[in-house]
Image (cartoon, rainbow, N blue to C red; front, side, top):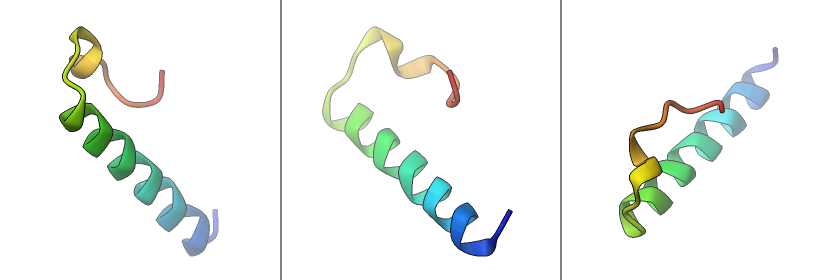
Length: 34
């Protein structure tokens, strides 16, 4: 995988984590990737 692809995946994961922090829910403990 290219470095740019990895950076995009990291940015996506961070964005999802930030959205979970803004909207707490029971799904927050679910590991990323599902």
